Image (tube, rainbow, N blue to C red; front, top):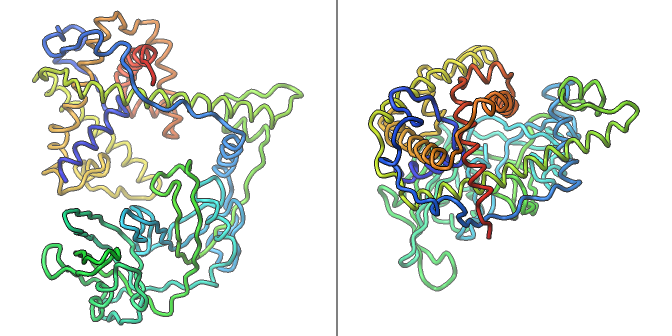
Length: 495
């Protein structure tokens, strides 16, 4: 678990490249002899060959979706919590849902994040904007909240009966000969009266348990189930452990199925057949604005329509150019990712300077404190309370860490984040020095406002807030990083 987490974290840092590059003072990347630390020949980085798909073409459908999403972002709430309204385009549907698709064993299970059945609260889905697959959008507009029923019993006094529907969080391990597969799933819906394979043995064993009860059949204790799950005439062994979250009786869930397009933004379900059980709790009614000069002047200040021109057509051209730039950036980022993977394979950093490590630890700890203070203010303003009692608690959420992976956030910084950032900085400044690619004063002056504006737009904050959040040195190093990587990408051969 720990090793996988570190690998994922390192890959994440490499892909985003510069999110944590902070200033240096004790160790100077610009003045130090970086040959002591980096072993790179020019052919190791200039003109290397990578394999990436071509940049995505922008279609009329892409433009339509972007404009639709823009309009939905600026919709106005009319009525909240309607329980008899049929959802329409632009509304928000509040529902309980469990989206399931076949895993590698052919079992229907919800991928991570595709069920809220065990969370005790509804999830909001916007009708429109490509947030959910079109097939499900159509289903969610077919009926109102009162036509479904979802009332799981979570009291510990309830007893699971053989005719109930139960909601579980579970982990399984399947052993088939010498092959073993395992996974964990939240919000699993299991009808005990007609359990889907392979859960027949588990269904029979859950009777008599109560909400909140844990069960373990062969993971850390107890006996696993043995049966011919794939029909090959040989028994497989299925070990299951988890917790019963709730019991549901007389449940009347709606069911919808759809084939999700292969280019759907969420890769967990893209290109797959998905089954969804759901219950609509309520509908929030919204009005969605049309595209007008006033709307664009307020929210797209850099769009300048011509006098007497066709506003809609000109805005479509504007959106097209934005999407082309975005596609180009994504293509560029994919090449960068492979360049960093290439450097990792070369293992070209001979050692990490201790002073650089110490400086980076101090700076990342300071940056984490600044982020904690920044987000704390936002949480206080929006919710009236900061959900994180300390920098340490915030750090686990900020870096998406499990508390079982590291003794504390500082261990993660020392072992993963800091070494990765120092390696990248050594390589970037080594190449910049060798190739004469150091950013000039004029480049800093020209690019700094663009960098600040980009991060401000990406996070939905003002330029002043972005500067306060990251600090000027962050953006200066981003400019140097971009100059080096842009030159490397331009020299890269694509196959």
